[in-house]
Amino acid sequence: MRRRPVWIVESAVAVPDSRSAHLPEVALLGPGAFGSGIAEDALADAELRLAYTWAEDLVTPQFDVEPLPMGALAVYAFGVAERQRAGEATRQLDVMRLLKDYDDARRSCAEKAILTVEASDAGCLESLARSKSALFFLAVEDRVGAENLRRALGRAVRALRGKYWKTNDLRAALEAQTGQDLGEFFRIWLHQTGLPAEFRARYEGAARETQK
Image (cartoon, rainbow, N blue to C red; front, side, top):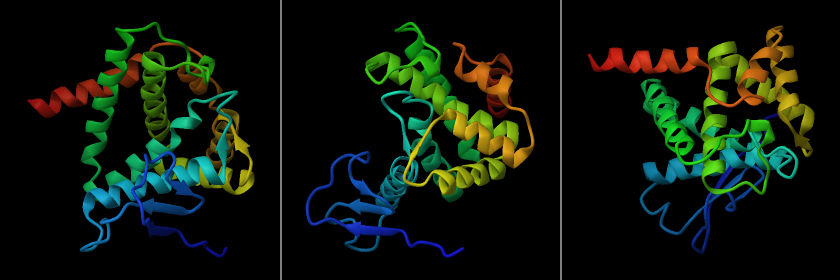
């Protein structure tokens, strides 16, 4: 299959936040990013912008119906790129940071199951749901393997290019890729509040071992 090019383009004017400064398969960087070669922070910004093109432009979450977890997929994809650049050791740090963000938000507002969060929800509730959504994608990695997840996402993008996608599309692609029934896994993560105890124990236990 012929691969399409992906472009990183310098803008003549200041570029707004990453969610608005992108086009399909194009990332815009502000003036100066190319001055002496793309600096590491500019490269990271470009990776985040490109993640939004794949997760929100080539296919688009139905934000008015089901904003999460698919609306958090671009940030997950950016984390994958960052780990490839900085090493897999950063994954544990990412999980612990997200767990802290989730716990901090949960102390400030009442949690809703991810699939009941609405586009109008904001502030603490949105932060809480986004943190859990990011953890959900990492838990999917744990369940099916990172390579299977990426192949399933590729399968879904090819099938739904130019259309909307929802969580059921992700589940269907994952089950087609792995042959597993993921119904109970998705139910626990997306239809219930809280985090699975085994997920938290695994990462907090690993953090304690690292600190010894």
